[in-house]
Amino acid sequence: MEMQKYNLQQPQIGTLLAWIDSGEIAIPEIQRPFVWDSTKVRNLLDSIYKGFPIGYIITWRNPKVRLKDGTTSEGKKVLIDGQQRITALTAALKGQEVVTKEFKKVRIKIAFNPLEERFEVLTPVIDKEPTWISDISTLFSSSVNQYVFINDYIQNNNITEPDKVAANIGKLASLVSMTIGMIDLAPDLDIETVTEIFIRINSAGVELSQADFVMSKIAASEEYGGQLLRKAIDYFSHLAVAPEFYPFIKENDKEFVGTDFFKHMEWLRTENEDLYDPTYTDVLRVAFTKEFQRGKLADLVALLSGRNFETRKFEAQIAETSFAKLRKGVVDFINETSFKRFLMSIRSAGFITASMIRSQNAINFAYIVYLTLKEQGEKPEKIEHLVRRWYVMSVLTGRYSGSPESRFDLDIRRIGETSVEQRLLDIESGELSDAFWDASLIQSMNTSVASSPIFKVYLAAQVKFGDKGFLSRDITVQDLLMFRGDVHHVFPKNYMKKQGLNRSKYNQIANYVYMQQDINIQVSNRPPAIYFNEVKQQCVDGETKYGGITSESELRENLERNCIPDMTFDMDAVNYQEFLEQRRRLMAKKIKNYYEAL
Image (cartoon, rainbow, N blue to C red):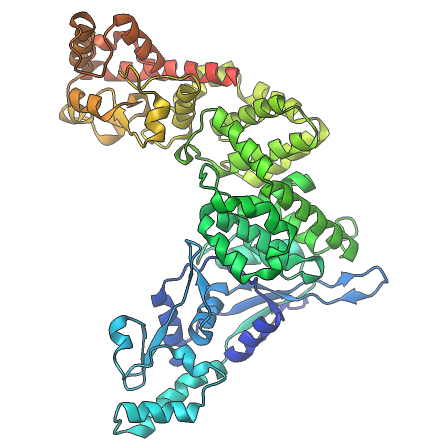
């Protein structure tokens, strides 16, 4: 009979919080952004107060690691499930700040009415009402005498039933004595099983991933500088989104400020570039894949635990080496020169706004390619060429949209066996054949989704080639993208609606162009057969109505660069399907020319 792989405990809430304070259970100093709203915190406290179940906390003690002298060391417990609940408890009962999704530190104050036995999120109105305990964390402060606290409340509110109120406040104070279920997974469970448990138990709640598990694993390994490494990853992803977070780090984390990690990321304090705002998952994935030549984050958990894949045992030397490699990967990732030059390569391919980046995994692997080539000492111009081409190839083929870890793993291993350039050539010969350009790419443009990656590549091509906006003489597509221009329709939306076409029909990406707002207003709901010829007429008489084009050669060039078929001059709704088919072919040809020019 197989042994049970876990044991059940019922620690008091106060004991659980003490274990976290002492580090017995490893929860990183920098929490995952707290995604619960204040109402959920209130409901959690209310459930505990009423004796309702709040689910299990699940922990896993790191496997025993064999040291150089032959002895073994016990690892700390890693929190597998329950971080949001524990964060809510520390916020409400201990008054600790939480980090929001916007990376801002806030206090969540929960009020309690002893007369009604009711919890509420603190509001200005409640704060002025003496019958409410405005912030229950004050009751749990070590400096507060519970007897004095109750007596003061009774006197301030002229309570006629002091025993009832005293009992209710006492019940509130006893929240820390209430028990909570804890499942403690056995330390000899293999990494893959624990990872699977971690992902399964979180699939129905707040979305967590293997990256969250890795981050918890890193934080639990103080002997290898795990806490500082964890902070470096977290702080970088914070600062990339919110540079204003910099003063908070500098003022409140003197230990981290004294590290090389901090020096490497100080440049972010004035950085407002948003083309690539990597999350902690992105930092981990890039650093791990590049340094370890592997693509599956479950392997990283195993390596950081010291796993010898051949003997299936855990060795301190492997853990130490793995932390050193990951540390190097993170430092390389956050390097200012590397990060900015990589983004210059992406921008030089025509991807100039964050809205054009539709695949985070594609840009992640492109950065892996950049860092790999840089470490190999390749010339900058060759690095830029290969990075541009790899990124666009990835987007065009949707290479990392399904099973990205398997693709990462395959590509990085092949790169290790040959080279980036050879691997790219192999992929191109297999996936970017004539059949792709002449059929598959055209078919993929039969969509109404304006955020389609293919349409973003088409726009990047227009930026790269310096194309003007539709019917514009001076304003480029790049100008329109940079200054929040918008897509409009060659066959106007309202015109097509009147012809009985639904949204999926008239909102085809082959019907989209970037056009100045004033030109779009003039087009109104006219079919191309009318407004195209009016534009043609202004090239004869010079009286501009649609933009500033006044010569037919300029008009022809503008339409050609925007992939508009010649026969559009005579088209109305009857010809719409033919227009779409012809324009898709022209757009595909433009994308092919663009790719070959990268």
